[in-house]
Length: 549
Ligand code: FAD
Image (cartoon, rainbow, N blue to C red; front, side):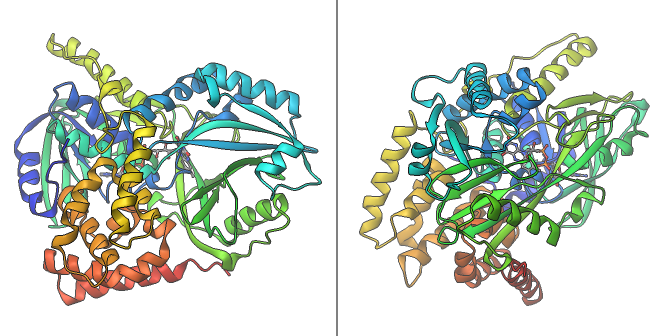
């Protein structure tokens, strides 16, 4: 499967289509929820438009813990049906994108004075595996203190009683969103980033389109559609009020912060999920040369665009870590990157943030605006199916006609054409051998395959055609070219944050390559010197900004 052309040069054509065609569904929001809906609906043969006000996945869908997980902690709140549903979904997503949804064993240490003892954890994880239908080697394994310390010597010797080893998956949320969007393009969806909905068209008291502004050309236009879906995550209520004052349930935002360390500073061997001093659960996840951890869970009342990281967030995470791993002594100055995201939770009277369910909910307004909020990255495909099934039933009532059922459980996500995970490993091996002749480091093959899957071939095909003093330089330029040609990179941060994750996981490479990337983008997009300087400053501030002293 070859990705479509999806570049700045195509924007005029896409905008023309968006303003002239009549769509079955307009999806507002290009996070994982909107992307999933666009794919589900377009694969059923519907005519779909999707607009995103920033870059794709620039909201919560690039700021999660990046795990495809069943939500073990939800068992505490007795949410068995949620755990069953999304627990099983993990294996489906792994099958559809085995290069991007990777098996990850997690170690859960059981500590002295913890709220729950070893027997309760053993029972909890038995239920977890049972609900999610986990089989064979992936089933949880109870470990003695000795076994746990052998696997992870950094665990506190005086506090660890035992541990459980259990199976989850990890991913890159932004790349997953992008690939789902690119897969929807194969089904002819009309999709664009940097296009903001500023108003809704409620002709005849029925929502049937939206006013949109293209933030790049600064031109406004209207999109017409039978159904409009508001999939704007933390912004869901901002869109709902464009329709009517909100009646009933509202969104409550909770902020979650993650911080990143060099693996030398935090040499954890594999993912760990531990209970902090205050009973909150923290994930520590190694990834390439770094290790990240999170998250906080605090109320957030400002505008979603203004989410930031406070000294208190940092202090909280560091104190939990230093308490758990007394030998590592992490300091604010050790942080090399960080991100903060917002959970759009459905407000429940009298419940704390931790107690509010993470399940999704769909609201339909009197004028027919369909809003979806809550949920998890892991459950995106199921959420999308529910929304499109709902539209299917509305469609039947209104037009006495119908369309097909969801097929996304069988639609391979772009880049993911591998028989299984072993085939992904074999492909990495092949590229690693190939890279030896170029003098490229072996971990580059792993990075490329986990980011782009089989599409790595398109990146490698350009390698010898591009100028560069080293193979590494040719490779980064070829990667940019692929992202500009097929992934609608418009600004440098689209590339460094959401297409490659380098700003989070490899800041050094941002510093190393930013001039070359800026220069290639300037040439291709004809930026003025002023615009180039603006982007350069933005990058410089960001790479220097991860200093939380
Ligand atoms: P978003 O990704 O926020 O997308 C909404 C989009 O709408 C945004 O890109 C925004 O720019 C756009 N938009 C807003 N207004 C407009 C407008 N007027 N016009 C056009 N576009 C607009 N889930 C998991 O399964 N695993 C995890 O490990 C996990 N960890 C998490 C950790 C944290 C800290 C947080 C906050 C969440 C986590 N989640 C996790 C949940 C998961 O990240 C979210 O459920 C998911 O990303 C929400 O996606 P979304 O598309 O609904 O929202």
